[in-house]
Image 1 (cartoon, rainbow, N blue to C red):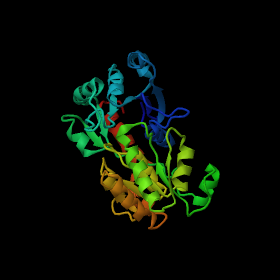
Image 2 (cartoon, helix red, strand yellow):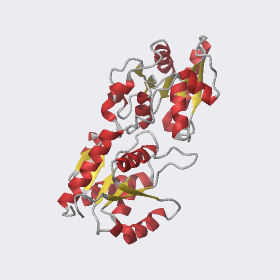
Image 3 (cartoon, helix red, strand yellow):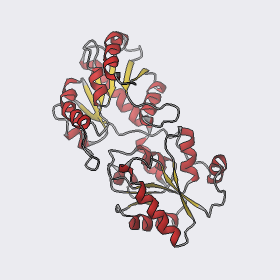
Image 4 (tube, rainbow, N blue to C red):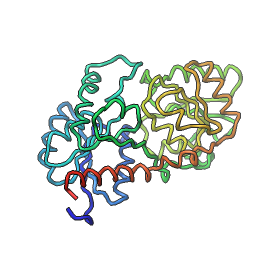
Length: 327
């Protein structure tokens, strides 16, 4: 490989956006960012009951076509490491390394956390989004890369325009609360958001709670601009990407103190950390709705741009290729 030839990467994942699903959106954004910088990335989206076995076979057969095999999440990292012809980078996502203390533990979760430290040591490089995860993977060659936001896509749009596009109430005195998760997932705390909304309505507040889940990017962006506050009453999160997307759209946020939320929203006026009760959520939502309609979130997280995150990932690639003598 010459210094002028593009780096060829095979990204292996079991979570990637499909029609009707937003799952893995941050990985899609990363792939797009890498391609913009000249990295040749092919995505192997593993699906089906035997996806890891078939993925390992496909990887062993195709590894020679790439410079780096990049597995995303522990099990896909194992698929990437099924071959030793090419260097392996593994990005761990959170629940594959750290236990969710709220949800019941599962055999799959226990197995993932058991194999992740060994997989990390077997990889040529490891990427994680937080120091807490790095501490859980001793002996690995780790780089911390926070998820980057595509500021070109997630951007402020006039609220009237966004509401009109979605067919929502054009009266800006009617306030919309955005729950950008599936209410069927207990860990996301829908009942708290629902009861907080009822409490506000009982006191005469013209508020309405909207669930938005499984929508394509362009629709999510419209909702973030049409609504008045993002509501995140989660019991546990690693690093909720939706908070960073909301910040990029200057949308006020009320959330529980989970993952990196407190650090991301910082001191942005109009964003609040709430206790995990309907009463405190209602109080913080009331404050958010009576403050500025939009925040300075976009400028406050300028350091979390996709360009910055992409540059760090590319730096990992170059370091791995140099260390393994492939560049």
